[in-house]
Length: 277
Image (cartoon, rainbow, N blue to C red; front, side, top):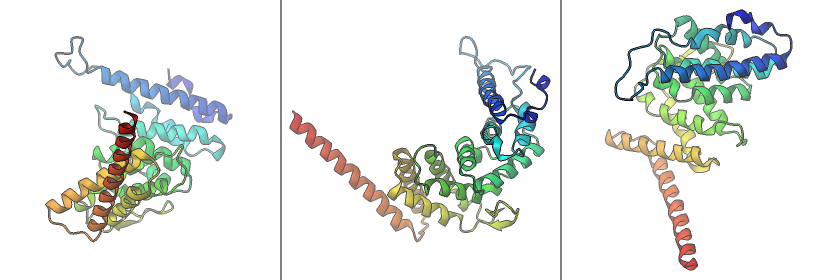
């Protein structure tokens, strides 16, 4: 039935185009839920055999890639296309994603994450998130600096509404320990107009600086908690392996300051409770 629609990107009305892609977002979410429930038995005691037919999550990928080439008047539909590409790529599937899909998706991520359109950056970070790196897709480490750049752009923004600050800090926390493993890995330079490779030797310093800034001044409560938790895990790993990074002392001070503020708030609440009774 989807194939009978033809090419939805030939719609000349941007409003209709966005409505179609909004429906495709809902359809993709429904197909993903159907696939998850195919692995649930009636009695919840045994695992059913793999189904013969599975929902085709990637069937609309060509439409999404083509939608990104449309003019800026189609912005709303294009944001839905970005969301769909992220969702279908980071959702675990029975069949490995084709290399052509991954290469095009990486190109979209590279140009979008380091671009100037903040709405695109927010969409890519929100719907790819730290899950992108946990999947260990082929070539995923190429985008290490791109995600660091995008996360820094989001947490440096003064806009609290509509910005995925929690997802941005989660990405940084997930990436904090990766530079120890990928110290000599080549990554894409964060430049939307080029595809130049560079070593990621200083990625750890960049991530740590941003997390320290979030631990001190991040206005979103959940994002700041994630930053502090990430710093705590980082310090535990550093001290366990006797790695004395120059910013370890600053990280300790940030954690101690956060604990002091939390204790002061707790004491204030207890004093109010005591006066009440």
